Image (cartoon, rainbow, N blue to C red; front, side, top):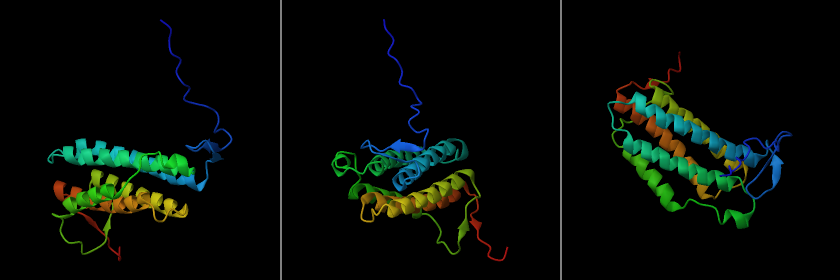
Length: 192
């Protein structure tokens, strides 16, 4: 029986600072499009860490539904990243896309998490609980991704709307984690 050769993990094509987009176009690794989909990829990694942290940090709360939602978000982000990694409109049209139903689903998730939360009367700082801190990291990387997508001039895209809602989701999730774990939120002290 012959062995199927593995594809090499390293191609050496990026050694001089360039990479290929989905459409085959070669661009600098510092290209705005690469920065945008790189941020989305980074966000996806942080979400994986957040999802994993829920197992060990929130024993008192059933987090299975929350983990499924985070997994779904990770898949949505992969779809966004593939579209950001392409400039050819014909190829983009064939890639998985988001529509209003994805945004509506995310808004329902935010509403569910926000419903039991006390009214916010002060700015809060990231911290107070490890899983909440991961959610805040996700929020800030999401905002950076959103800024880079705006920088591409994609101001009327579903991807941009989704990222805007997603940062709200992570802020709300961070607060929800505090509520569920009975960890106090860290209040901003302007006079500290």
